[in-house]
Length: 308
Image (cartoon, rainbow, N blue to C red; front, side):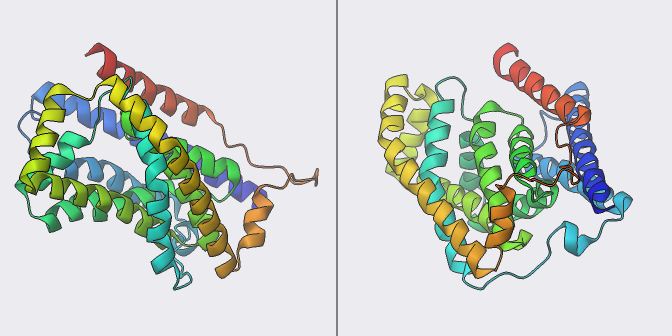
């Protein structure tokens, strides 16, 4: 009976992801057909993009009548997470930078212009609220839905694909998986919200400093107009490879530490052990709605990046 319940949750999560994609495409088509999209401000755009995730999430929670505390992992965690989680995020930064640099060899940056434009024209607290606090809460509520290894991997892929551009998708998938392991290590969604906030806030602060220091501002504007040369990107990639590897090792070590602090190390180990009980079947993670949603996302990204 419990296994059937797990399978229903996984199946429901797949349909939920497909519904998110449908909502996104419908809103994009409406904005395009009515020409409203060309008139909305950057702040309105950010609020709308988060609403497209938050509203379907709330509707799904209400329809599924799930146990909010259990499903959303609304649980306390060890107090040392306050210190360890930011260190975890900083350790992952070189890896995210490396993946971002690799993706920029083929596609354009999807976030630099948005972040720079927002922090240049608004106070720091506004940028923090729109780009760090809100995504940290809304996106974690939507994507942190499973504790099994396959569910964490699929959840990371979904998290990356929902960004709807190849640049963000590249590093968001890895970040989503790491946040999935963090949620499993602590048993709480609050730590992933905190980590998500820290990751986005680092970008906000860097963009804020770059837009308010004249020398850095000129460098950013020059880079935006001329682009980044492939040779420069390749050099950045070579420099960051060892730092990314060391940072990843440190991040994994911190996940293990958090698992021990929260008494969840055996639960995490169980994810990597092969189930020898033939009577207990693992839930099917791959499903038709999930594959369909991923295909739609990839198709949309190909059209917007290489066709339009």
